[in-house]
Image 1 (cartoon, helix red, strand yellow):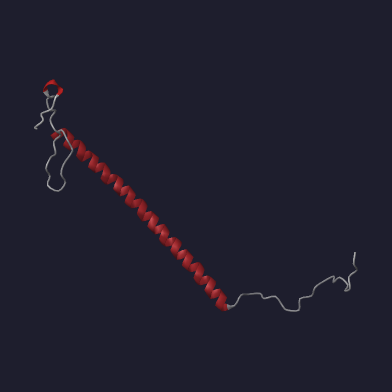
Image 2: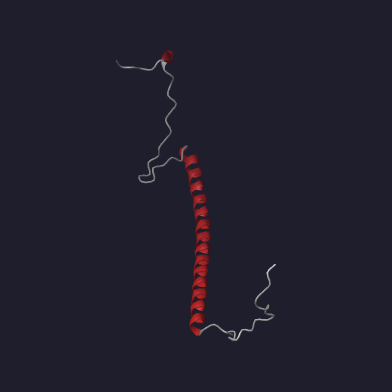
Length: 107
């Protein structure tokens, strides 16, 4: 093996003193960034809470619709209602089967 030309240093002395704090400008930037993150997380939490409330309300409204459909089924024997006009769409009556299994055809 080759010998070292310079002796191995036992300790490296850092003559530059270590900083104890970041600059005021850096502190302001990091505080602003953290504050922005916190505000966004808070807003997302509000939105999720509102979403949960709306989903709960939607479930209640859908339950009301189911009750109305049951009421219409009992009263009109169908719950197929035109929601624009209020017309009841009754199911077609069971037509009698064609004679001899043939349908009417016009040539």
